[in-house]
Image (cartoon, rainbow, N blue to C red; front, side, top):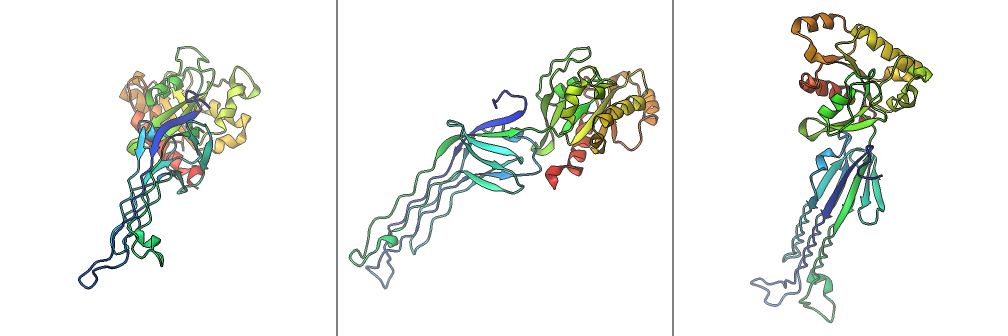
Length: 338
C-alpha cells in the first residue's frame, strides 16, 4: 500500500549498523617474557539495528520524524586475549502487526506479531579475529589480524496496516469528522450536512508519553441503517473491527441524549449482536452550547453504566478527558494486551 493510503501507518528510516572492531596484533610481553607469542583479542561486533514488538504501542507515530538510526561501532581487541566491546544496539519498538521491508526492492523482510519479539533489520559488522587465531607451527608470531567488517546502511520501510482502536458512532452531523480533525492529523472533508463522510477516515491520535492510538470516523448511520437504508449498511461493517466504540450525541439533539444513544445502540445490535459487547464511551458533543446549569441537568439524564464526557471540538473542551477515558478503555479490554 502507498504511503498516502489512509489505512497504512508508514515510516521510512535509514538504518546504519555499527562496524566491527579490528582484531589486535599484540604479542605477549612482561618482565619475564621478552618474546612471547600472539595474544591479541578479537574485535567486538558492531551494533545491530533491532525491531522489537511492543503491545502497548498502536501506531508508528513515535518514529515518524526519526529518519536516521545509527548503531554503535564495535571496539578493537586488546592484549591478553581481551575481546573488544560490542557496539551499542539500536532498538526500535513497534506495534504488533508491523511489517519491515527493504525500501529499494520492496522485499518483505519480516513481520512482528508478538509482544517482546525481536528481529535484526540491519546486522552489525563482525569483529575481526585477533592474531592468536593465526598462530601455526610454522608461524609462531603472526603480526597481523583481521580488520572488522563494515556496518551496513540500508533504507527500510516499516508499515502497519491499521485496525482502528476507537470507532466513532453517531448520526450524521454529530461532530465526528470535526473531532477527528482536532485530535489527529487527519483532514476529513467537513460540512454541515448529512453523509459528508462517504468513506471511513482513520486518524492517529497522539497521547501522553509518545503513545498514540487509531480513531476511525465511520459514516453516520441513520435509523434503519441495519436494514440497508441510506449509506448505513455499507459502513456498519467497519465498526466490527474496532476495540472501543465512541458514541457521539450532539447536545442540541431534538431527542434526549439517552434516546439518541439507545437508537444508535439498537441499530448496532440489529446489525450484529456481538457489537454491543464492545467497550463503549459516550461523548456529548457541541458542549460549548451549554452553560454549567444546563450541563448539570443533562448529566442527570445520561444513560447509566457507560463512561461519559461533555466535549466541544471547536472550543477544545473536554478533549484531554476524552483521550484519557478512551486510553483506559482500549487498555482495559484489548486483544493486543492478551
